Structures are given as C-alpha cells and as structure tokens.
Length: 82
Image (cartoon, rainbow, N blue to C red; front, side, top):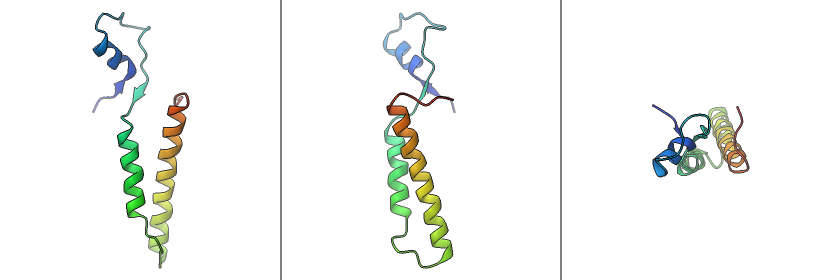
C-alpha cells in the first residue's frame, strides 16, 4: 500500500510541474478516514462500563480517539513533523 503525497496530487493536477526537490512529499490522508475512526470509537465505547474489561476497552478506545483528534488537529494547523 503506497502513500499519497501532496506532491503526487500536485503533479496529477499540474502535469507540467518540475519534478524532484521542488515537489512537496508530505504524506496525506483524506479527512474522512480519521473522522470514521473517531466515529467508530464513539460507537464502540460502552456508556456505563460495568466490569474491568469494558473499562479497559473504553480507555483504549478513548486513547485512540484522542490520538486521532490530536494528529488531525496538528496536521490541519501546520502539518505533522516526523
């Protein structure tokens, strides 16, 4: 599975751009993907957990959801730096 980059999208839209170092190679993900992850986490979180397993799963789902929100926000506010 390959990454889609801003540079590849730019080259698709403007095929006469100069390739090489002038092309931005920032990997991107359609916004719908993290939104679907957040939505799925929300659906799977047990509203009133009654046992340790449900609590542990809720904690993991909340951690995943918060990470996705954090990364999405960071990307939209100026890009994720490696």
